Amino acid sequence: MSLKCSSSSSSIAEQSQGNNNSNIDLVLKNSDSIEVLIEAKKHQSAEMFSAQNVNCKALHECIFYYFRERENKRLINTSIKFLIITDFYQFYIFKASEFDRLFYKNTHFKKLYKNFTDKNSLFKGNTEKFYNECKKILDSPEYLDSIIALVEEISESKAQDSTADTSYQESKIDTLVYKLYDLTADEIQIIES
Image 1 (cartoon, rainbow, N blue to C red):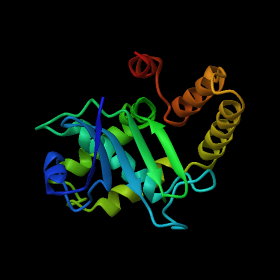
Image 2 (cartoon, rainbow, N blue to C red):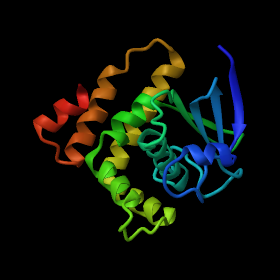
Image 3 (tube, rainbow, N blue to C red):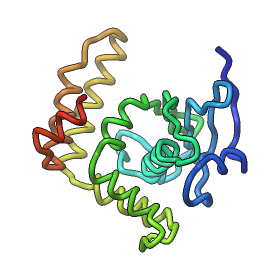
Image 4 (cartoon, rainbow, N blue to C red):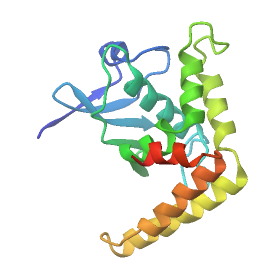
């Protein structure tokens, strides 16, 4: 398998639906399929993701790009494997399956993206408004604190033993997300299937 690196150009932007004034910084492709989305920030940027700054613009942009790739009416991209947020000193690598589970299948984020892409939307293509709404969705202190603690626990376990079973902590994260969004048993079943 050979991956090819591409910076955000008009050809990549043309593949994306909706507002093109917010482009993916960098992608890795396998043939013509985008498999890795990369959001790059300047070193020490306040917009950069970290354990202390989870609810940040870099994450909001990744959520937006993931939705845009998955919802593109001309070319639905189901080949994304990873999303990376980096300042080129630190790299945060997320499995696309986690983005799918935590954001793409979440009714609040789905509604937000649908509203954003609606031609009659109040967003009027303003991605900053989209990012602000992402922040509101994620801004529950209880949600963030508990998620951060579990993510740190998973990271520590994996750092000590890359094969460590973290399914219990991952299950707790799922439960917290379901509780945060008051999901019904039927909605949970849909997400988990």
